[in-house]
Length: 406
Image (cartoon, rainbow, N blue to C red; front, side, top):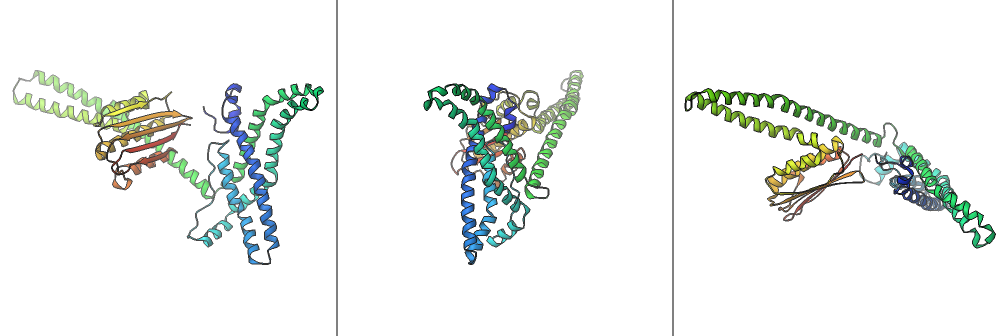
């Protein structure tokens, strides 16, 4: 399972951890923390002094207000930096102002507890955290380098080279451990509290994901019931009609009615199979996304080139979402694009399924035109994925989807 945080990365096997990007990500997190913390402290001190000195005029109050609201900008940058060592994004706790304009924005922000919590975090980060980042970097990297270069000034200090060489292999673990601890503290201080919009948004996303999972489970149940129940019963009836047709006198009215009934029943079985595939294809449940896409494209009215290479079975929700993305995209190609060829490409990289569907049609795909793109975007968003579309009028249409597989 892929690590989502720096602390999780530390639990990996030593060789895998050392050859991964996590030590470098942790190093970038601490180095950028030192640079950003020192810059923020300098700027805020200058603004605070300038505001106090000029407090007798209106401009001083404006500067001090900017200092009070500085936590919003600092925290936003910290949430962005947090992605270096914690892949799950930290939600923004601020709500949107009720009215447009600067005054409404200021009133909303000054009344929010999150604004003052972020100001407190800014004070802690500017006065303490970046100093600790610098201390850890100095101990983990600066000290070993200093010991290893000590014989340059004093040839008799060569034993310290051995000490430095012994300390250096521990540097990736020290740096990553502190980066993980600092990230956990940052998330704890900046995470939305109960009742704040960010937490409510997380709950909405989780609820939407649960609904999608429940719908997928229900679709699979319906598919099993259709396949194992009604479809098998109709096939049995079709066989019995065939046996009755053999016993009937050829050319008689009874034989004609039996043949007609058998034909209608065969059409019903075929339609039921198509319906069953649309609800939840059996190939998807039994063999995975690659096989299901092959079956889907084989039935497409437009020739489709398939390039799908998946290293293993993906989570059920990801496979289901990916399949219906391809199905809806190819349906749009057939109905609206006037294309003569299409391509389906799929790969898994860094635990993200990337799907690309391209055609050589006339373009101009519009979500408002009823092409199913809105529902497709909602389904992808419910899986915490991203959907991008390029469809210039008169040109090819490209649908690009990214679905996390964690």
